[in-house]
Length: 103
Image (cartoon, helix red, strand yellow):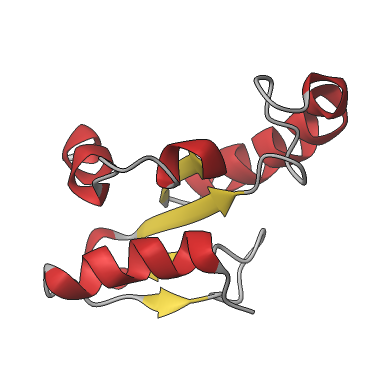
């Protein structure tokens, strides 16, 4: 299911002519997968993933699960980016900033 966080990222990737697929059937089922970069992108909702800024009491519950997924994917050779909802919602959000940090 697409939500506004994912759509914002997808729109920017499309503007940059970067091919991606959604919800690749691998551990954690990343929101967006870019095959050319072997990159998994997770658009983490502040509530569901326990953002320390907006939902600090939920942070501990989700941290280990999200960390395990990220670590497992990296061991399998994937690059992983997790982006918080509050960062995606900023007016100056630019996926290029995250992509350039990887390459």
